[in-house]
Image (cartoon, rainbow, N blue to C red; front, side, top):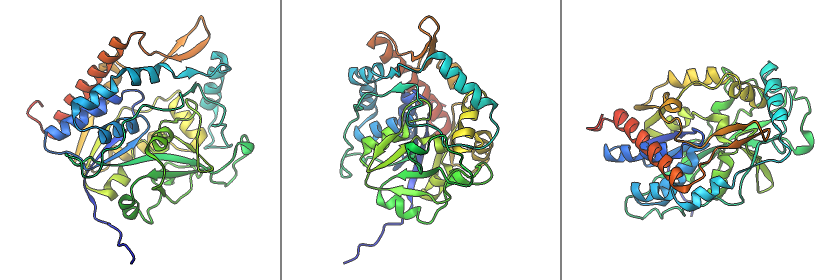
Length: 353
């Protein structure tokens, strides 16, 4: 007997739209939503937000989630992210300069297979997803990624009119049914130069750990991730998937983010994906959401409270500045969580606003 698809929208979607290594912020935002009576039944995540989403879905309460993120295992994982030996500072800065000078939208197939700063440890210490029948009803997860439509032997070739990427959502079958026939927001000609396929692709079979690994694989930071004979790159292909959230849920909780870095991020988006990141962000901020939590001051408010890139001039390298001591890392997680909780309470109408 044929099983009917569940095409009922989710009640409430919380979008976790990246943010580098500030995973703790999203745990705090989620805790605020729960405390304000606006717990989401769907988390839509991209880039670093995918790690926070997996932790939320795998643990039963805010304290357990914060403890997991601050655990020695997560600290060891971050400390294990190593710079690629042959990525010298001269090579890195030269590549950034060439992207800044280039004006064409994805003129060539970028080398996302070998041209990256860091190598990731083989496995990320994520909790197993809670069963759907668990107390507290864990939210469903939908994670944004990008699929490469070219192989490593095509790197450097002129694009012409080819599509080089497809926007993919790793999600349960219910979400896939709701998105059936939807075009890829990343391919919209208002900000896309034609390098992304017009159809949104969904994948319901990829294991969660692989989907998270795909989503965090930002170009030039981490290598592509291979699964089932295909190569995938990060959720940066669509950091702000508000159209997907609106299609999936009746209520949308969205983040208002700071502009892209004009010297590094915007040129990378343009030359790899053919995306005008500034135009995309302006469009997203002009859309309807039921609540916006504003993190545009995160870089200033959390200065010194997050893992980030740092230039080591003596070694002529760019490395991740992870604290030397676990206690300092745990303090960073706590500061991030408290920042996210404050922002969530302001946005969702809690008494602490």
